[in-house]
Image (cartoon, rainbow, N blue to C red; front, side, top):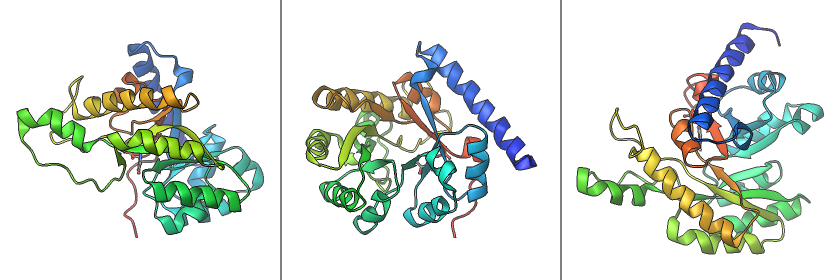
Length: 259
Ligand SMILES: *Cc1c(COP(=O)(O)O)cnc(C)c1O
């Protein structure tokens, strides 16, 4: 599609690519070790098509229904060219559906979800890569408390507490149709506008995620993925070892209001 929207997407993709290259250089990392997942939630199928045309190989969705409808609109070649990541909060009753089309589920945070996804993958005759989502709000608030004493942010973004991650990893390891591939986190909401640098909320959270990623990898050597970093904090995520960035608005623009 050689339209204006395609040109805009090409330009914003190039800007994000520059940020990734610069952040990799700043932390001595190889650009090829950092993968870009473009989060296309709320944006139409045509944008997914445009992104494929621009060479994007990985897209992320966060609503089961919306994602399934979008994917159904792709032809086989387009679908085969994509790795589809589910990055949203997952309800048990949607797990079977998601297991039938997702390639990677980033948000596994409880036992019942492990069981439900494993069963769903089995019924669909496929295997699923999964990441364990960690809730880092507690840790960051502890680190932050002496300075700010601010209340805990709501844990509505999901995730298992850090101390529950090793046991959950072992459970996924035992599931016949799931492959444990690593860990994921969303940085806690920043509480001040100039929250940047090595002691920022995001940096503290991503450092903790890196520690947990090492711990999981020592028991599960194939769990090498670290999904962290969004439009606003991808530099800090790269500095702390992220392998998969989940970037939406910096590429697609502001999201349309949810209906
Ligand atoms: C929407 C979303 C993103 C992308 O966020 P942007 O700030 O638009 O880059 C990343 N991760 C998750 C889990 C999301 O839901």
